[in-house]
Structures are given as structure tokens and as C-alpha cells.
Image (cartoon, rainbow, N blue to C red; front, side, top):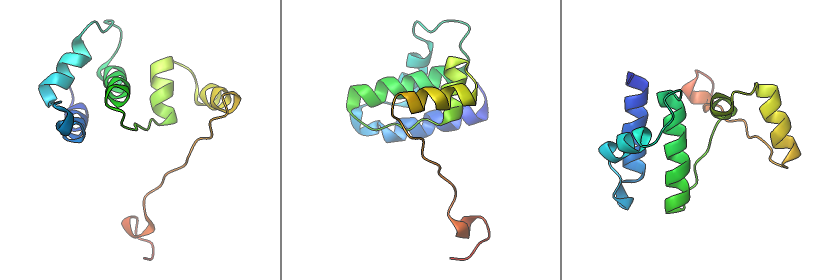
Length: 102
């Protein structure tokens, strides 16, 4: 498991701590019945989906996340989103975090 995945697990555990979810629970969820061909990123996306649904918390997924799980291109995912009536939202850092004005 790489450093990025461990950081994401830690953040997810903090987000769901009030629901009794800790890092060990998340790792166990990532490994329970997961097909061997899924990598850690896909497994963690699946855990986020399950936790969000189970505890009624909103989880947001990037187009890249969806592409990673489905194996589709960005264009294919955006087309499916459009067909489903879902508009993607573009999020960027605040200007003062990237050297712009406040």
C-alpha cells in the first residue's frame, strides 16, 4: 500500500470516526471479497461509496475516479454523466493558494 493510499485511509477514518469507523475497519473493507484485479485505489473508492451510503454522508468522486473504476475514458464517462442528467463540477484551488490575489 503506497503513502497516498495510507493518507487517504487516515482521512476517511477521520471523516467516519463518529460512525465508529477506524483505519483498520477501512483496510478490512478494502480486502473483504474484493476481486484480486482491483488495485488499492479502486478498492478505496468502493469503500467510500459503501460508507457514504451506509452512513448517509455525501461522497464526491472525480471523473478520474469513475474512469479508474469503470475502465472507461474521460469522454465516455462525461457522456454517460450527460445522458444521466448529471453535470460535473469543476473544482480548483483558491487563487491565494496558487500565488494569485486574495
